[in-house]
Image (cartoon, rainbow, N blue to C red; front, side, top):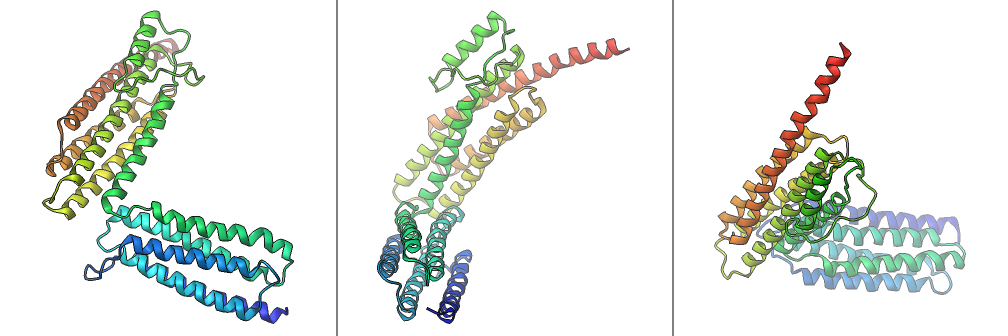
Length: 363
C-alpha cells in the first residue's frame, strides 16, 4: 500500500467532492415553476438508497483493507447516487416558500456533510491499522443512516414547515415565561404587595403553574415586582395568541378549496415573521426584568409587540381564518400590554424621586 495509491484515492475523492459541492449550490436557486415538482416521498426513498450505499462502504472495511479499485468503484457509485439525491431535493422545492426551502436545505446538507465525513475518513484510513478503522468508520456510517432517516421528519409542505416554525417560537416563549415565574420579591416587599403578587401568580392568565421556589430575582423591590408580574401576564397572553394562531392555521388547512393557496402561504410567511419579531421582544422583555430593570427598553418591546399583534390579526382576518377566540386572545394581550405600560409609567415617576433627592443632597 504505497503513498501513490493513497494520493490517487485523494485525487479521485476531491473530484467527487467538488462535483457534489457544485450540485449542492443548485439548492440555493429557486427552481422554475415550469419544472415538475418532485414528491418529498421520492427524496426519502433516494435517501434510503444513499443509506444502503453507506452500509456497503462500511462493509468494505470489515475485513482486510479493500483494494484501490474497489474503493474507487464504490466511491463513484455512492457519489452518483448522492448527486441524484440532490437533484431530486431541488425538484422538491418547486413552489416552496422560504421556510420550507430552509428546512429542506438543512436536512439535505446534513446528508451531504455526513457523506463527506464518511468518505474522507475512508480514504484517510487507507493503509491504517484495522483497529483504528473499526472505531471510526462504523460511527460515520451510522451518522449517514441518522441523517437519511431524519428526512422522514422534514416537513413536506409549506404549511407544515411554517406551523412547526411557529410552534418552536411558542416553545421558546414558554421557556422565557418559566424563567420569569422564578422572579421573587425581596425581603422588604410589603405584605399587601406580596399578597397581590401571590394572587396574580395563582390566577395568572391561561396558566395555572405557580411560582417556582428558585433563587433568582429575590432582590426585586415592590415596584419591580409589580412590573415583573405585569410582564409575566403579557408573556402568558402572548402564548395564548400564538396557540390560537396555530389553531387558525389548522382550520385554514382543513378548509376545502382555499381561494388562493399561494396567497395563504405568503400571508402565513408574514405571520411567521411577526411571530419571530414578537419572540425577540419577549426575550428582550424577560432580560430587562432583572434589577436594575430597564424601563425604556421594556416600553420599546411592549410597543413592538403591540404593533406586531395588530399586523398579525390583520393577516389572519384577510384570509378569513380569524376566529372569535383568536380575536379575544389578541384583545386580552392588548389589555395586558396596557397594564404593563401603566406600571412602567408609574415606575418612571417613582424612579425620579430618589434621583431628585440625591441631587438636592449633593448641593
